[in-house]
Length: 225
Length: 225
DNA sequence: CCAAAAGTGTTCATCATACACCCATGC
DNA sequence: GCATGGGTGTATGATGAACACTTTTGG
Image (cartoon, rainbow over all chains, first blue to last red):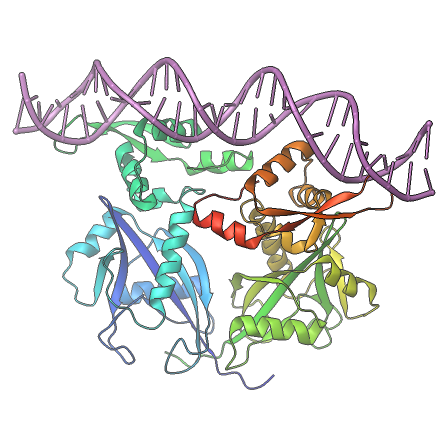
């Protein structure tokens, strides 16, 4: 083998959701290249740490964020994707709950910001391509794995779940059929608590039951929307 | 950033199929570590080549094989996965047709060999984990994307397709229903040619029509078994 | 009592499944 | 003519889709 001089980095596409808006967390670059431009958070992997560790570390360093769901997305390695030198990046995608989302939405941090995925700024490197890949994955995955719950509070009214799905799938869903389908899966716990959204009838709160889900999955029952 | 000394490699899990047997192509290692042990083909990425190029190059160098289907599988990066030094590997998974499969099955090459996935030898590094990931992906993917055709000859009798699916899914399939389902998708061209398997009634040959498939996919019609 | 959101059942069409016999060929 | 694999249709149950009114609360 010739002398290899490839650098390895990780990047994280983090999604947040609130009231019909899917957002992505971006940072404003402080260094060359693409100084001042927006980018997906990420950075180089240390010699002794795992890739997951690197993502979580970089995310925390750059944004202060701790996420509740993380999975590997894809590895981007075109030779010219970084103008400096050859850098191969393992991209991850993460999800955060609204409580965390709101924290970051309210601070006036100039260098860290949520962007609605329908109004993205221009991005550095091939980060737009990475983001598109992540959005595609998110949209696809919520139809066959229950990851949508990771974008909601732990306790949520059913209407939140419905709204999330209409937003992500980009089409209306029949409320009755959707409720029937989800409740029949038997992966939600119905709580006694109720919550009111200011006006209208208060809604019961539900909670995703991972245990039940993995049990059913083992038995071959499949989540599907 | 500290001085990074991570090396990047690619590995390829290549599947072949013939008459109810799913096989994987393995090579016998000629160098340390794990000398003499079986491993998935792969090697280091050159500085100026793309990852896909690296996989294809390494595959060709090590096995002489050219594959007809290739996709990125997952990136494996645990710090201690290689005893020498930190090596992160982007794993791919590939499929070859029986014509190619047979070529390699017949040669007496000591260092390159197909192994039925039910009787694998002990593997080097974390290659067993990579292989399991690939098998899982293959099994999952054939149910929602028409990649199974890449494991058959371009022209094939319907029974071959059926056999492939029973093998991969590990359960019997009703011949009439399966045929109805696939033919209703309208992604196969029915040829005039027939083929005989020695005894029994000769079978019509079919051919996967990628154009039709992509057309239908664009219209939102989904392949599903 | 009005506005706003939550909650709920039935009907119909479609699709998946179960199931068994005849056909074409080689020997 | 028999052994071997190829080819075909129908009936039934299950599931998904369409559809609108009542309930509970706040103001």
